[in-house]
Image (cartoon, rainbow, N blue to C red; front, side, top):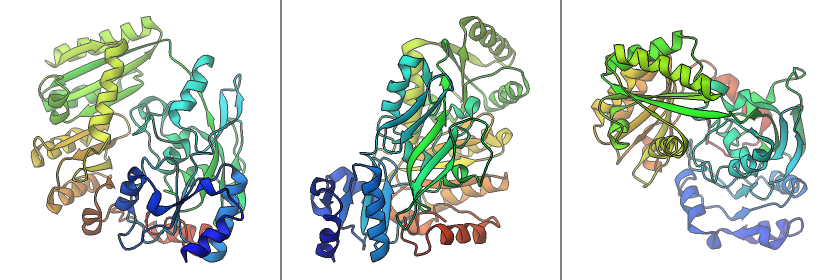
Length: 435
């Protein structure tokens, strides 16, 4: 089968873009090893240089019923469910061009393989940026970020990545290219495929281009770090939610995070304001006054210290350092977030870290070493009891086979299956990775 695949692929794509799996570097192999069933080793890693080649690859794969695992740089390839089969791993990393940048309209259209780091560097001279802060920000591609719906702390001010997407194009299961949305902010025509593809994990099609709305880079920035007793931090969080203050980012942090980052003792709350200097000063003073009444310790930081602190927070919780670690995503009613953070701290002292967004209740967690399934079940139950969820993103296959990564128990499963069947009737795209 391998030689048959090679001969057909070589007729449409250059040899350097067809990499036999045995010659693929170890980083790729390790990521795929985590997500593809151990009995199904891919035959090739393909890196098409343009959209036409990508389309032709998918068309041939469809005709031959070869299963495909789409990705960008593979930084989140190990997230989600265990893929049952993958003959081809298809990377969009070479589709990395800016197609159109309407500077005055604050919109940009890019190919899916461009990294967020490179995109921000292109936008910076125009005093613009894309307000998303995902895991692996230096490696992550735009397509991969959208496919995994990976948005971090800036969700507080700008919403999730689905709120920033104006249009996209994707390669269908049969190799045809489809488009949705447009290049303007007020675009309401047609079915909202942008939101459907956000968080689809490569199961509905291969994202090829994306159009985003952009924002001006804030003039100044400042962050307040608050630590104290759980009850006091909870009261501070509720006060902030009910106030007229407008933080750009706001995260509640478990005691283990506070301790590891040497921020103090107890529960933590980190709030970032980005605006003109006068506004930052006024809002920070208001928060400090409330914190003083609640006996909460506050520390204000800016510039390199502030940037380093947010980076450390993201890396501590969202990056898996060993095969024994588990990273995941949770959702919970925001006013129950502190309870969830205390629960993970009680169940995994010194071994679990978590943060939860102040307004949305969306959070991330990381567990060191392999916890008992009982710990994961308790954390998922607490999330679901409070109208939320718990998803396992990164973990070894043993954990994922024993503890279903998604844990979805709602009534939309039949609808999801119908959509999957409509977009991928032969189940060739990332089979079993999602619901």
